[in-house]
Amino acid sequence: MQFYTRQHQHYCGIDLHARQMYLCILDAAGKVCFSRNLECTPQAFLAAVKAFREDLVVAVECMFAWYWLADLCEREGIAFVLGHALYMGAIHGGKAKNDKIDAHKIAGLLRGGMLAQAYVYPPRMRATRDLLRRRCHLMRKRSELITHIQNTVSQYNLPPLEHRIQKRCEREGLLSHFPDPQVRNSIALDLAMIEQYDALLPKLERHIRACAKEHDRKAFTLLRSIHGADLILPLVILYEIHTIGRFPRMQDFLSYCRLVKPARESAGKLLGHAGGKIGNAHLKWAFSELATTFLRANPPAQQLHERLKKQHGKGKALSVLAAKLARAVYFMRKRGHIFDPDKFYRD
Image (cartoon, rainbow, N blue to C red; front, top):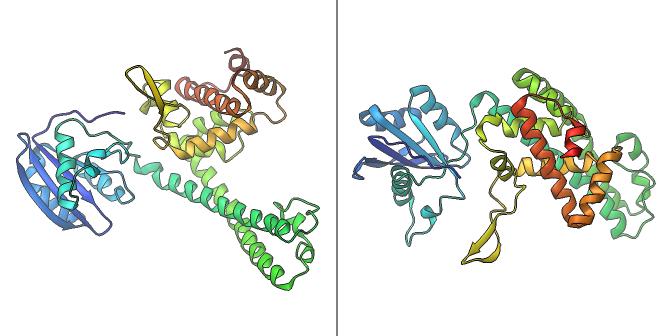
């Protein structure tokens, strides 16, 4: 967790929504200089902060509508801070809550150096990252349709399917497997949607790969040197990390990837674990998936996995392997070296 501790003459806290925003500006002594509800337009924002721009910092909570404000502040030379939503508990801890109170609390946290920062992803790669996240969402929807077909077979106690239905060529004659006409109609809907996804997703993946080679070809090549890293996992890791320089230590990177288990401790007593939702869910998925694909047709990795199972148990072994792969990726990006199997298994 990193706090914004720079000192300014004025501190602007914004409770930002899709169509309106509440601005509260404090001076260095904590006095309210401006407090008003405005429309979410660049003109309204710039007019409101015009008298305070000499030494101003702006902060908002990390939610879906912050892109335009961050880009506007960058263009206008105004310091911008993105508050980490899960760390900003002071906003939600009061007896009363409204936009005016929230904006004042954000400005107060910013002035006191207690505003936990989230990463402001630069606009150059941001849209491609969001497109890749959309691709992953659509792929999960496709998997849900396939799962529904398989569950329908079990639901009606029909004979198991002879082939895996992930590929189009293996879905021929699938409807004849279901004798009930209404069930066939339901499966036909699933198949129609799957075919639409099959037509759209490969084109989208090719486009994202072309963008990755334009944005950071070297990092993309480094990530693909890992055994089992197909074309999608390196893309997810590349775009979710953006630049490895934002992580001063390897431990910070593992924490961001949700590959550590923070303990809650008081008076020497372990009270459990927390913080499971703090971090990047996409990187957590990518490294967990990479730990599985890394084992395929890889005897040294399988031997390592067996040793980890004896030490930590079957359930935890893959998590340990995912964290080990994340450490390797961190140093690969830091040093610009491809994956070194000898060093990986030796360490």
